[in-house]
Length: 614
Image 1: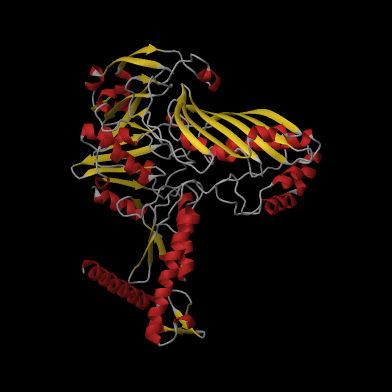
Image 2: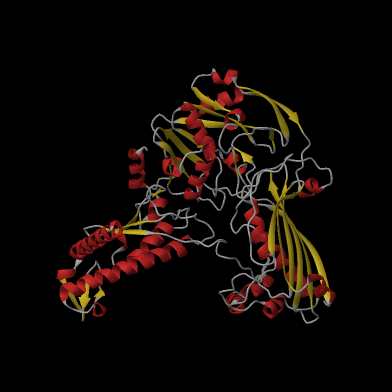
C-alpha cells in the first residue's frame, strides 16, 4: 500500500480536535476532493443521452488514439468480473452499461487520461449506436399493463426476515423491484366494518437532490499489494466488502481511507462509482481520480418521489382504529437502497399512534430516471408527511383540534409502534405538550403579521437505524499522557471529531487539547457498519465513554497501590493528577501515571498471550 500517502492523511485528516470548527472555517481540513496521488490519471464518463436504449455498438478506436489516453472501459470489460453488479439487497446496477441504458446519464464508458481535458476530449470521440426504446418516466406509467420493462429477467438479490406480520418480496411484478408488506393487529377488514368514519386521501411527494458542497469523488490505486482507495463514502467497511465481492479480491488486500466528507445526507452511502475507479486503475496500471461535476452528482442518486394512499378508520370520538396504506416509491432505474427505504416507509406510515389494525404495502417502482436511494430519514419523511397531513385533515373534518386528536391516540412509553417491534423510549405526549408551550407565540405572530407563513404542529418517530449496531472505539494513552482515539465515525460536517474528543477528555479528566482523532482507514480503524441515522456520536461516543471510564478505573487502581490509599477514595483532578482529601499527589501525576498505566497494560497483554498459548 502507499503508506507514505496514508501517513500524510493521518497527519492532516483528523488531527484538529477542539479547534475543528475554526479549522473548517479557515479551509484547513483535508477532504477527499483535495487529495492527489503521484502519477495519477483522471477518469471521465460517457453517459447515455437516452432514457431507455439498447446498446448496439461502441467504437472507442478514435478515442484510444488521442493524446494522454491511457485506458478506456466499456461493458465488455465488466462482463468478466466475478460480480459486475451492485445494489443493496438487489444487485441490478452494472459498473458500466452492459446491455441497455435505463436513464439519461447511465454510464456507458469510462476514460482514464493524463488530464481531465484529455479525458473529456476522448469521451466525446467515442461513438455509440443506440436502439432507442420507449421510456417510463413516472410511477403511473411504469405500473400500466404492458408497460416497457426495464429488466427482461430477475436480478440477483435477497429478501430479509422480519418480525411477525411483516414480509418482503423481490421483483413480485413487472417493474416492481421490491415489495414490503405488513399486517398486524385484529383483522383489518373487520375493524374497518365497525368504524364510525373512514377517510381515504392521496399524497404525492417529489424528488430532491442531495447537493453536497463536496461532489462525489474517489481515488483508487491497484498495485501488487492490493487495492487502496480514498473515498468520500459514509460506509468504508461495507465498501471494502463490496469491492472484495465485485473484484474477487480478499478483504485484507483492500484498504479504504476516508478523510473529512463535505456533506453526504445519505447520498454517499453504500457502493456508488468506486468500482469504476478500481477498474480504471486495474486497466491503466496507474492511480486514478474520479470526481463528478455538480450536475453529474445530481444524476448519481436522489430522494424517492412517492405516491401515498392512506385509508384510515376512526371512532366517533376520534379514537384511531385502523389504517390501510399503499405506498409507491419511484426507485428510478436501479435499486440502490430502495429496499431499505421501503422498509422504513412501511414501518413509519402508521405514525406514533395506537391502532387496532394496520395493513401496509410499499412497492418500489422501476422507472427510466435517476436511481433513488438514501436521503435523510429515508422513507420516514415521505411517510410522516402523508400520515401527519391526514391526521390534521381528519381532525378538522370531525370538528376536533389536531392537537387533541394526537393526544388522544399517542403511544405510551414502552408500547410497540408495530406489534413485535421494540417499544417507544420517549414520552410523546409530554414532548408534544412542551413543544406547544414553547411555540405558543407563533400562532399569534402569524395571524397579526403580513408574512405569509404557515404554522402547524406534527409528530413523528423513527428507529435508531434499523439493524442492531455495535460501535467500537480504541483509546491509546501515550507515555506523555496524551490521548489518541480511533473510531470509524465519519465526519460529514456534524462535528463528530470534536464531540468524540470532548467525550473522551471529560471522562479521563484531561484537557481536550490533549486528545486527537486518527484518520479513518479500514486497515487500522475499529470496524463500524457505517455512519448514518444521526447516531454516530451517540453510539461511538458511548463506546468511547465506556472505554475511558475503564481506563480511569484502572489508573486509579494503580494510584491506589502506589499511595496505599483505597481506590474509591481517590479522584482525578485534571491532567491525570490524582487527588485524595483535596490534596494532589505528585507521585501519581501527569506522565508518571500514564507510563504506569501503559506498563500495566503491557503486562496484562503478555499474560493473556501466555495463557492463550498454553
